[in-house]
Image (cartoon, rainbow, N blue to C red):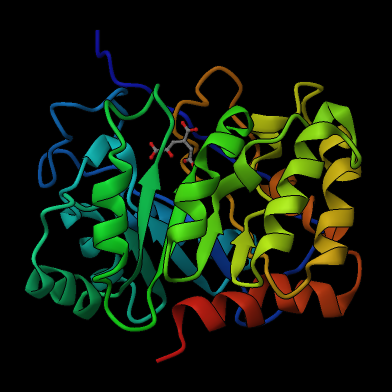
Length: 289
Ligand SMILES: O=C(O)/C=C(\CC(=O)C(=O)O)C(=O)O
């Protein structure tokens, strides 16, 4: 029997919400295909193939126009699978890379030419063995023009990360808002701490994403909607949204991507907010050139 895991819904519903023209799914991944793009020997999970064809079919099914493909930890620092998906997208995808901190400037430029516009620093211990802050800062100071840093951490290390975050010399995008405990509500300690971070710099962005990871009450994720809508309302120019497909490590409860899309009008209730979240904001980060 295969030890490979399937973490995505086999037949996601059609969402009731229609994304605006040009909408970007700005947080998704590809896995393999393994035969062409082997997983890292250090990978903490071994997924079934979820390649570009599946991703683009989902994009069309959900009514999106474009993708930002974030290199997943199972591919380590070899970005070939993500670059392959971007190359196959006919200009409809850009990416976020994960790099070895010793990467040369020429290699960074090659990633830029392949459609990457950011680099991801992952601080989740269950996903990566080490996260060397000094080396990350060195890379952050050498990024191609217009790039940003995407950072993934859990709420309990936010305070400890503050000096590091403060020192990043380019815009910062926080994955899944640093995983706050949404059951505490919009004024809970985790969201308050995250707001303090947002107030510290006007170039820190966030993804109001992953109700399936953050709300233990499950679909339709009412606690997530209640806790997160005020954040989008207060920082409408600094958020981008994504499905998180193929939902790495979510194999226990496969989220229905159509239902995830239907979270959008609950956290961004006006057409103006939806346009910013799905089109204007990701355009500024990923399609500025
Ligand atoms: O996909 C996400 O954003 C979240 C992940 C997986 C991940 O980040 C990765 O494998 O790189 C998680 O919490 O397991």
